[in-house]
Image (cartoon, rainbow, N blue to C red; front, side, top):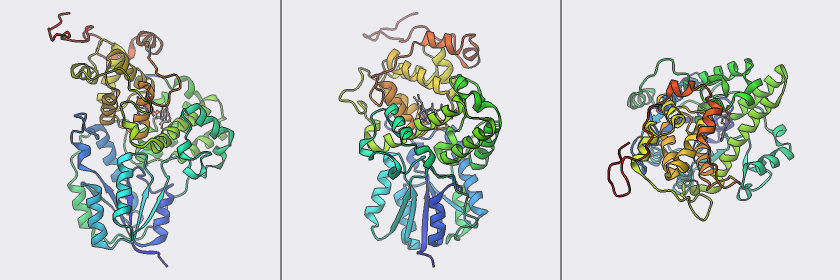
Amino acid sequence: MALHRVGLYWFSNDLRVHDNPLLAQAANECQQLICLYVLPPEWRQPNRYGLRSLGEQRWRFLQASLRDLHQQLQARGQQLLVLQQNPLHSLAELISSHAIEGIYFAQHAGYYERRYQQILRQRYPFIHYNSAATHTLFDPLQLPFALTELPENFSKFRRLIESTALRSRISPAQPAPLALPRSPLPSELVQRKWQQLPPVVTVADHPWQGGTSAALQHLQRYFSSAAAQYYKDTRNALDDWAASTKFSAWLADGSLSVRQILDALAEHERSQGPNESTYWIWFELLWREYFQWYAHAHGKRLFNFSGLKQRGPTTSFYPARFQKWCSGNTPYAVVNACMRQLNQTGYMSNRGRQLVASCLVHELGLDWRYGAAYFEQQLIDYDVAANWGNWQYLAGVGADPRGHRRFDLDKQTRQYDPNGVFILHWGNQHASLVLDDCDAADWPISE
Ligand SMILES: Cc1cc2nc3c(=O)[nH]c(=O)nc-3n(C[C@H](O)[C@H](O)[C@H](O)COP(=O)(O)OP(=O)(O)OC[C@H]3O[C@@H](n4cnc5c(N)ncnc54)[C@H](O)[C@@H]3O)c2cc1C
């Protein structure tokens, strides 16, 4: 006997049907179910940094993920309603028109997403709410500390996780439910809403294709190759698809679960043998885990100029410098190449991200939040916790025990692009060597 006559599953960072215990719970508890995704219109409008939260590359990827999810749901007798509206308005309408009794949503590291969830609970206390950590390796209750006691840096966090052998207690990924309760919504309405979505700029042969189907294919291909065996040696490469795992974009929107990656990694270790490189994939997934809980623990301080510190960095905002950084026209060839790679593909290697962030803060003297906001707009794998947490770290206002990291860009170029191949491919090696066009008194500077 179902618990709720009508339930609502609100998808966000969990765009999948497999390894989604919360969806399986909704399937067991509801007679009818509405599956909903809401795209807040402000994501595509200029924010306080004059940028958009959702740029073209991620929008293309996200739409493919949503379509794939819709198909997966259809195969189980369901459908995905996608609305472009303030989430609270969408939910208010559905709650009153369908007398929703139970709502299911994944825990989210995003401050605004959590605010929406809180407001919903306050406005409709008569509804039964169910939430679970489906975006992370661990449930908060499994962590060997309370969230308020989150270790102040990654090394301490990792040591605690490893000394308590928590990896062995991570449950394996769960299969998708075979069938789901039917939707009370007419399929014509759902179709109409799909047609109203903003168009996608298609990019032929783009390596990042959204959705679970593409994610699982990539997962299978990655671990059946030898790439994982060399990951630790190759992961810092600036431009090689196989050099790092490239799981990030699917992890970010949840079309792939981190536990599925861990299962595939374990299987790979059984067949090809564990080594330092396979361990390092786990290590990096722990970084991700750390930043997820960091965002949960620090709430809106994730976006503060001074981060977790008492004082912010001694940087400011220079629009012309920022513009040069965004478009890859700085005096630093490697930074230009990385930024152009990001602008064209929506992706940049981890090493590249560190270099351009260090350049923005230390060479250009810019407010790190603008850099983070630009990444938010451009990155196909944008994840609120990983992005803002890493930017804080590099700006010296976050979880870095060393205070801040300034990369020697010449030395890094010699190390990671010794023959100039990367810069030649993406770069603007003829950019002006002069940073500013005007001096402090606003006089034009000639080269
Ligand atoms: C300034 C800056 C901003 C970043 N913004 C994001 C972001 O918005 N979204 C995002 O997913 N990652 C972000 N990262 C982390 C990292 O650069 C990317 O996860 C990685 O480059 C993605 O490529 P990959 O999947 O091949 O990574 P791999 O090297 O193969 O790593 C495997 C997985 O581990 C996780 N991971 C690796 N490094 C980190 C890290 N430093 N922090 C958190 N998780 C990590 C990712 O989930 C990644 O997919 C950022 C790093 C920096 C320095």
